[in-house]
Image (cartoon, chains in turn red, brown):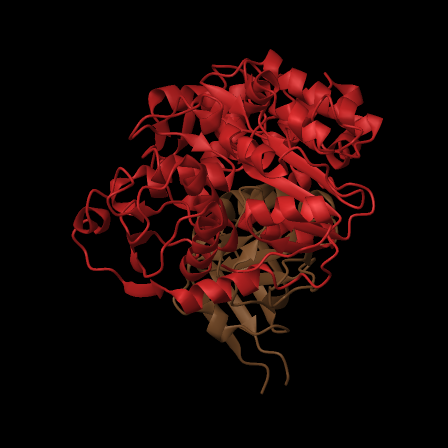
Length: 432
Length: 141
């Protein structure tokens, strides 16, 4: 059983109001399920509080009409409470990740007016209660950069793995319900990656091929995730000093094919100055190799579902594109128009979109016939251009999810392969 | 052979008692993007259970993987009436703990023998979350 501090007990007893009480009740059930003995304090919570979906809007229609509107979804779903309570202003630093629809492009994304209204209303609800509306899966590209050792409570597997591995902050993969409860209370179970001993590497992966491009990092991540599941890999080899975007694609892939929440790149990430530190002096449980054969097999796995070379949709921006990735797409478009048989959508955060607007990238993408969109992506928003049958993607994560969710074919390759497909309507990518 | 009951002992994750037919996989399950919560169906492209449903089954599996939307997917399955009746699993993570809590079904882990080698799809399984025990009645084969 989890042991509560006086402050936590007071919240559980309702002295801080009904909202915090219901949040604490959920957190206690959660901590007991985990076998956690205490909570840690957090001032950095990232989730999707009160986010609407058409299903939830309809499911809770009666409860919503009988009480104060959106508190019904927040209470009954987010806090898994049996009664509707008023949501108080959040009690700690809180931000909203991706979700809903780009407010300027909801029709293009295929949202019904009902869904767009619900998206707008739930965003307003979160903002009114003190949640910063970042609307992105890359909060670290939108101003939320926790410090080394900081306890966080984040959702979004690609952000979680970035937070732990690249920043050295501490979070498990939280869910919607636990982050919503943490936003009110500032508490999250002290479990897993919050604790020193659970951050050490378990497996050694010797990288024997050069890993350079964003595509290379996506493939390596996809291989590592499938091999590791939720263990902690320590990588050594010829990978130089990957930039933020390469970490983003590596971690997102590893968190999709498996459940990697933390990795160490020896000589690169903050908790792995050397191999010994990464393993905490212990021996690796297993040694794996990533060579030409593994790379080839991973490429084949990522393209396993694609048959038709006629591409009618190109999606970039999974996880949400950094400004330099949008710049790269603009450079590759090179003033040309995309094929009339193909659509090009690039997803990013509102923060990066604003930069792209200012420097002219948004216009360049639009002049080519594409669109720069925010808040969501094709997988999260189940949003495809009408009639899409075959997509081309530069993200191992998106190619993992999108065919399964939307029942389409999808090719995986480099950003250049994808822009070429957008321009020609044909897939000509190959493993270099 | 049938009639023999095997008892596994472990740790409570979520309390309560439920029984039903086992659906067993040796592969971890993705929530969001890996299942259709409305139907309770596994949809992950290369999953061995692809196309099968866990609705009203006792789901026996290594654990959760993938998106942080795991709890929302299974929470939604509960509301849609498509959730499993109980969970038996090996690897404790935040995804599966939160998912089990909001699914509100009996769940047990840390069993004294590996449930993936003892339980087969089609066996009748009773999960007692309060005592942390799992009773297995083997299907006639």
